[in-house]
Image: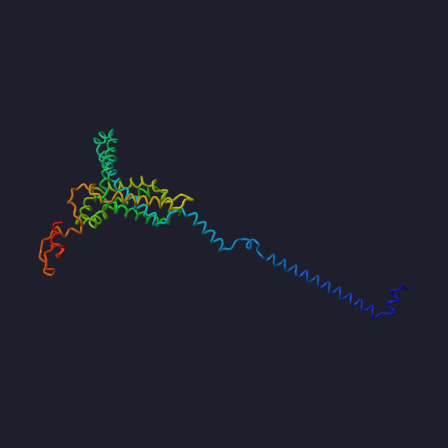
Length: 336
């Protein structure tokens, strides 16, 4: 009989205690291992439930801010709508003295096309016609440009309004419809010019002349003179001028990528405004084709029909206007 067998026979309780402890140890080891397996499976399940693609993607707020900043920097070259409208209006007003020269060529061509004899006589004289238009009429128009201030204002209002309506209808120059409308020289150039040639002479020149110079009845006179005799000429002249101006205004209106609009469009608009003030400034009396005293400002119109009358309230003589039935100044005011 071996030693271990003798030990078991002599101390059976001690051996049973050892076996019990060994069983508890195995159970504890098994429970610990099972808990570890459960924890690992839970971690795997959690990792599997997480969408790493969404987790690694930037947040929506960050993407929105990035896209907004990109759109801002990408559209920094495009001037806003009021600046574009102001540029079209200022450019049209600045080019108003050119329109009589284009209109002269238009009249000559209309006469030449209708009459074969005139067309035959003018077949070799187009150089002379262009010389008269752009070397005689054009300098004369700019020399006496202050007389054309109402026409320039009317043309600027009509052209700016037409461009604004076209831009709003198209949804801006970057939209699909706006790109088709505003990037077509026949529509954005000739169409706006033809609209200006139709609306401005009929409905704007007369009221503006009346408002600035007090020429009563000029509105009706210009309407009956323009329509229908010169409407075709003014519309075709506006169309030709609009097509010619379109390539000049293309880049200032749409801008150049990576160039801020203030560095291009702003400078062009500032230069056009300065040129408008220089050309249409009527301070120099020598540029007026009328002799001194032929033009009377609106504030001096009451003096045209005035008398010297005694003012009982002021106890002195004064200038009394029969037009306004009021005293308009001292007695020496009539002599002015």
